[in-house]
Image (cartoon, rainbow, N blue to C red):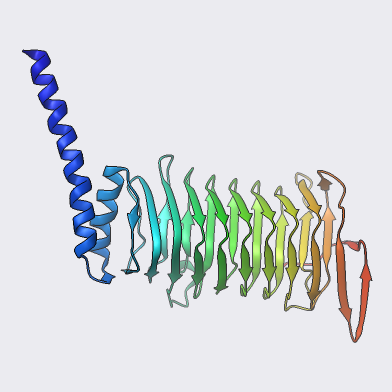
Amino acid sequence: MRKMLWLLSVGFQCAAALQTIDLTAQYAQNTPTVLNEAAFARLAEASIRAGRALELKGRTVLLNNNFKPKGALHLMGPGRIDGTGHSVFQLGGRRQRMSLTGVEIRHLCVSDDRREVGAAIFALGNSRVDLANCSVSSLRGYGVWIVQRGSVTAKHCLVSDCGRSGIVSFGDGSIVLDHCHVSRAAVHGVCVRGRSSVDIIASTISDSGTRGIYAYHNATLRMRDSTVTGTQDPSAHAVQVEALRSEDTVRLLIEDCRIDGNRGGGLLTAGNVVRESAISSFAFKEVVGRKVAVGSLREERGHVDPK
């Protein structure tokens, strides 16, 4: 008898799970082309419970507050998500994981108070974000902002037109950019500090307001087959790596990269910078007035005050 009751209980649970999946699919088909925050939250919660991806199917989502997924959320495009809060998505905690495929995220917060302007994606704690074929922008803030031990992996993504820096990690976070383009950040394209690490693979950092890449304190920067070009500040280097405090050590690896077409200097290293291997196959061009100097390697040692 107990066994029969247990089997009936399991059957009811399975039926409920199947019903959730069916209701999710049916609701998604009948939703309008523009989803408000409440409707999106219901769909996201249902997809998390069912363990299935939520397909936007060309819809636009409008969010007024930080959206905090209550579990592992997987969104599939095409589709666009616009947010006007501190951040569009905020993740934190061990179980917080988000995967986006083919989605455009626009952070449209217009506040002039920097304390109120976060990022398109704000990852805290031990959260993890995976992006593939996505577009990310922020009108006043960061494209992707990582603190504590958050991690972000982006493949074939565009991070552009950010009011602050494109992708940043402050703390112990990690970033992987694989075949990505970070473009037109108002400050730095990529910035890592603390004990954060960034791996940049076959990617381009272009048209940054100050520096293309800035790594300092105890950060790790690894670049392979990548380009940094088009920085706008003549007083700043395109790639600046520095460990100036006695307790600081920055690790650096640059292989088969190009740093050229920038208004300021190319590569600047300062302080205790440890190379994981020799800088190799490094092409550099610096425009000085109307003359162009080209060399297989040009590195400057020193310090430039951060802007």
